[in-house]
Amino acid sequence: MAETEMKQVIGDGASPQTIAVNQGILSKNDLFAARNRARFKASGLLVLNVVSSPGSGKTAFIERTLTDLQGRLRGGVIVGDLATDNDAQRIARSGAPAIQITTGDMCHLEAEMVGKAAGQLNLDNLDLLIVENVGNLVCPSGYDLGEDLRVVLLSVTEGEDKPLKYPVMFKTADVVIVNKMDLAEAVGFDRTTALDNIRRIAPQATVFEVSARTGLGMHEWYAFLEQRIGRQ
Amino acid sequence: MAETEMKQVIGDGASPQTIAVNQGILSKNDLFAARNRARFKASGLLVLNVVSSPGSGKTAFIERTLTDLQGRLRGGVIVGDLATDNDAQRIARSGAPAIQITTGDMCHLEAEMVGKAAGQLNLDNLDLLIVENVGNLVCPSGYDLGEDLRVVLLSVTEGEDKPLKYPVMFKTADVVIVNKMDLAEAVGFDRTTALDNIRRIAPQATVFEVSARTGLGMHEWYAFLEQRIGRQ
Image (cartoon, rainbow over all chains, first blue to last red; front, side):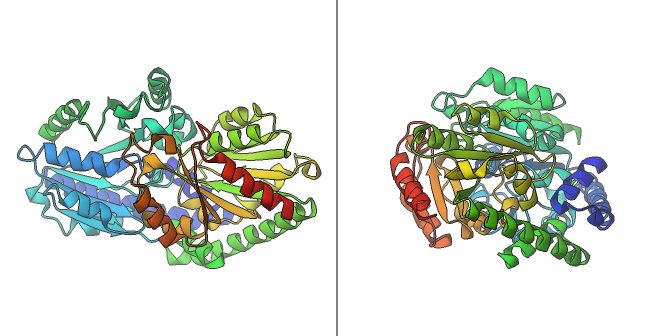
């Protein structure tokens, strides 16, 4: 992760003289991430860091996952947004505890914020902690939050070329969710090209094709999740 | 703009000790932006900075605009992406000159890059220069490129709440384009709520509802563009 993080922040800062300072900041994030990871492990939790563009359907995907798995696992959510607590309110409808972080102008969550928010949840009572990152296909890639799995969502309405055009994020994905498959035909989604592009940039990732709205393909995702939780 | 830019970069850096350094960088961007603006004005050009999430349809919107207005105005394009020159290739099919900037891990264009790319175009032969920014609803908001109009795209598939959740970008919009209106019914788009949210965050913006795919609503946009070009 170190190199990716470094590049990301050099990119944001765009000036050689910021490198040393940002290196310090990133090490600090890595320290907090390691602390989160140890704490999550001690509680036997599976932790997901869910990232995507704005509007790919992260909140709907998390909402449906927690609603459908009610009674089978105990989930909690930490939600990051620049503004509003709309998403935490939506997720709370599933009955899962949800903590909202509002970041102001910041386009990603950092490990320290997640650690603080996790302190408001009873982690020992949970099997699954889902962190919904700020909607952004670039910034969150360089920030380890202490998660077990990085889950990148891509909706069919965004086009097949996105893995090629945003490789930094896709290269760090453990799971890629192709969402809104119910709209594939209406938008002329070229499935073969999209899957080829995902495999080319993210050969390490497990891929699920779903519709969080209709429930299509969600059962395969639940089976994967429950198997991973069994291993924690 | 100065305050927004400042906040943006503090957000990215997330540490008080980076403030002074980033202030220097931002002033440098403002200087390059002012230089671009003077050069564009001298050439009698209208310059657009087109921003949105990945997959909102910026390239299709620009392609269609230039194709439909062929023979009526002379357009050129500068395209920013993290990787690939797919978009410049698509736009070149409209016959307009297109320069691709690949930014690596950087989630926005800066004025200096745009100035360099503009040097590769014969500006005196153009009426309209469209800069397609990197697909990102956060990072580009703090970087003035020397444009006349900031055009923010939002597609109906992204949801009605995006202006509320990404206010920084929408607050700086001169024009908001609601794209993919042909899919509005299929995705259950709530037009009234979306327009209310746009007006609440961006009361200064002129709003167009279009489909770059079907051509719906594009003529109102062209009339607006041609009127603005007449004024340059």
